[in-house]
Each structure stands twice: as C-alpha cells, then as structure tokens.
Image (cartoon, rainbow, N blue to C red; front, side):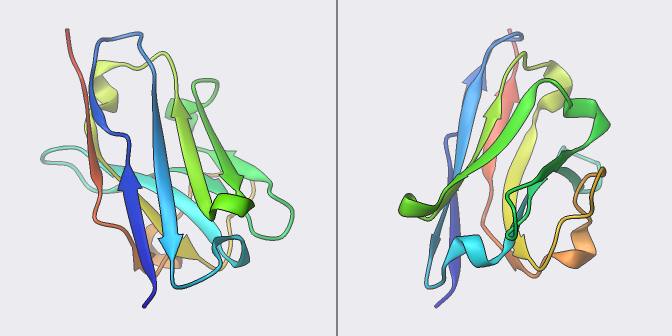
Length: 126
C-alpha cells in the first residue's frame, strides 16, 4: 500500500527553523516528483516546494524562496523540507504529495499530485 507520512512539525518562534520529513512506504519515492504543500486556516491549499524525480531539480513558491529548501535521501526513501527564517504567515498544516513532475520555476500544482500524506502542523508564534 502506497503511503506518505509527514513528521517534524511543531511550534517555533519567528526566525526559527524546522525540518519536515516525508517518508514513503510501499513505493520508491525517487520514481516520483514530490511536492510540499500547505494549508492555513481559512485558506486554500497552496504549493510550496517541489523536487523532480529525473534530476533532483527543485522549484519553490516565491513566498519561500531563499528560506525553504527541499531535498531527498533516496537511501531513506524520504524527502525533507528545511524551513529557515520562519514567519507567522508560514503557519499551516504541511502536506507532502507524490506526482509525475515538477513544473520548472514555479510552485507545485495541486492537480498534478495524486498521493497525499496526512499532514503535519507548523505553528510560528512568539
């Protein structure tokens, strides 16, 4: 059974850092593009970062460029999202998802991703 499990969320002060993990089971994660998405209360889910399966290239939403970094560890079948310089507006439930591709130069698109994890809460507050 194909499954994605996110972890690493929590409460952090503004300016702090967190690293989210997305662990896959039932499939080989590097055969798919993996996207990170987030959904804040009362807002639509939005794409944050994406890493492609073919060459490991990445793309990010403008709101997180220079602060968030997506990476993968194929040996651990896991994708990470390193989040630095966190802001209160980064508060959301963060989801990872698997899909066929990342679109170069833009945040991942919801409709392209068919397999989703359950999400992990990130709260940025003093």
